[in-house]
Image (cartoon, rainbow over all chains, first blue to last red; front, side):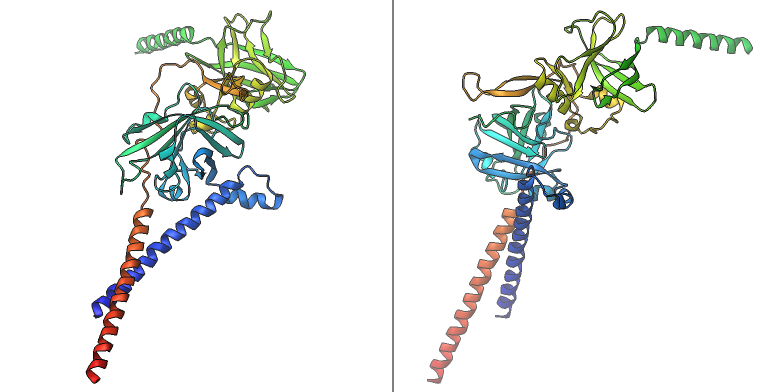
Length: 194
Length: 246
């Protein structure tokens, strides 16, 4: 009887801790999302310094309207950054830059909708300089050592990376890659193309 | 001993002279600007300047502009472009239309040169020039290759930067009304080189959150079940006691 009481207390504690941890991460991600949504908006003078400090590691936002995907882009792809948004791979191009932009995201959170992505879908990258439009060319499944997907191509491109299979529990053995190309090197140069 | 030292010195001098003769020609020129003009990464105010080739590579040259006052030293990339019509005399070549209301220098023709050396602008400036001029504008984007974006790029970095050509074109489906003018970017003639990977392996992007959530949810369900079992047992024990009393 006593053992059952101890077990019950232990389970309550474990359950509440786990749920609390998830809720804290959820709130953190929501906060980052709100920061990312403010990128590109005109700022009031008194808020400039505080927002700049807060958005230091949030460099922009990715949106795929057809999948209702909207996520903040963080400056790195370490564990903490990936919990708060989609991670930019340092050394790859910046949003709208001349080169290949590399973005990695969790398949079970921000990049979960990527399972439904198809060619010709529009991807928007939004940063301080404006909105850049990319169009999806293809998807592929590769092994984790195929880093050539981030190489600079003949035109500016975007490579989205997440783990595959999407429903795999634990460390998935493969990577799901989305290739897209930049429409215009100038921000807001073109409108949405479907 | 002295003879040996003399021979060594003489051979070193000869070797250096041979190297000097075989090395790349580094032409230089003095010029005067009467109106403010832009070069990659800097603005030339009216005054006197010197331009010279610092280094020659297979697909580009590294140029340096110094003001005679000594307050401006700007190093940037240029590419020999035989498609640009050579001017009658050596000197600057300007972009036909000013961009954002400013005059940009397109390149430089050195005396006796085989072609005009076209200046390579940072992306933002190249976009402005390409918007105002119907031509392909050479561009670099150091920020997109993990390099600094200010005017302190080393020569080594300049040798590795990827070159692009930007031009104003219709972007989008050509047969539809949705096509709008945009800045098309294409890679400049690629020099055969092996690209260094930016990371060793593609990122691992499976988080523990679903597992943690599942463990937490199962723990709470199990705890609730134990509570229910315990209360059922207590209830049945109380019932049994009541029956015994009766």
